Every structure is written in structure tokens, then in C-alpha cells.
Length: 200
View 1 (cartoon, rainbow, N blue to C red):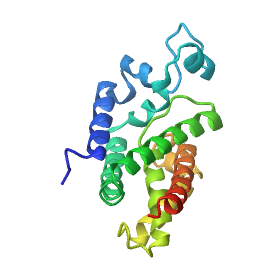
View 2 (spheres, rainbow, N blue to C red):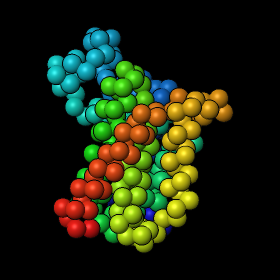
View 3 (tube, helix red, strand yellow):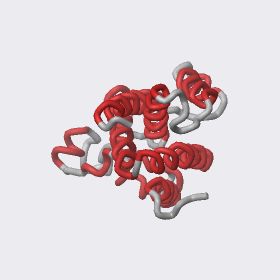
């Protein structure tokens, strides 16, 4: 059951609101939440967006955008599964810090690697949460979060399959594979840091 006082609950609510407010990418309301400013008066570039217009919120807002109902449901389900465990076991501070770092990292990675600014979704952060759990579960023989090994295997295989282009052929659209990879790496790093600095 969803805990309405939890951080993960509000992440899900914000994602749902953003997705419906932007009509899953088909509304003019989408532009203010994209990674780059693209309203006609500015050429969409990192410099124009962040150094001239100072629209720093765009670093994180693409995380809450989704371009289909399936995309939204799939990601929110993972936020619930992984986020609830991390928040309960490790605390709200760890969870929100992890979410923001992996969300920011995945967005930056996706843009700078591909040059494309039309992307969105919680999946970069989801892979960050997964990477974090994987590191701490390694240290605790899988007993910390009680996530089945098959789940890790499935998600890691899904990441690799994404880079083959097969998912697009089967109707999954353009998958932000770099965001997934960078998010997961950020989660690994955050897991290692917290493991040895906070003795989790």
C-alpha cells in the first residue's frame, strides 16, 4: 500500500501530474519542462538554457515527463518497489539524495552523449535505485532489500537489449539507453560511497 507521507509517493504523484498536464508530450505545456529551452526566442543550447536564461529546474524536470501511459505506469511501479524499500530501510534523506543525483546524472548523460534534449522518464533514476540496491545487497548477501536475483538479471539484460535497438522494433519507441546506463553507474557509485562512509 502507498504511504502518502513518503517521498516516493510524491515522486509518483508529480510524475502523474506532469505527464497528464503535458498530455504525454503532445501539449504546448511540455516545453518549460524539457532539458533545453526551445520556445523560438532562444536557440536550444546548454548555454542559452542554463547560463543565460538560468532555467536550472530543467536539469531535473525531464525525469518526471512520460510519453505514454505504459511508460508512466512501468516507471512508477519501479519507483514504488525500489523506492519504498530504500526509504524504509535507509531513510528519507538517503532516498531523496539518491533519487536527485541519479536523476540529474542520467539527464546530463543522455543530453551530452546524444545531443538530443527531447527525452524524459523516471527510468534513469530507477536504474540508479537498482544500482544502489545491487551494491548494498552484494555486501549483505541479498538480505538487505530482499530483491530476487532474477530481478537484477532481468533489468540488466533489459538495459543491454535496449542498446541493440530491438525494443524500438517491438514498439517501445526511442529508449533513453544512455540515461539508463549513466543512472545505474551513478547508483553504483552512490552505493559504494554510502556503504563505506555511513557504514550501511
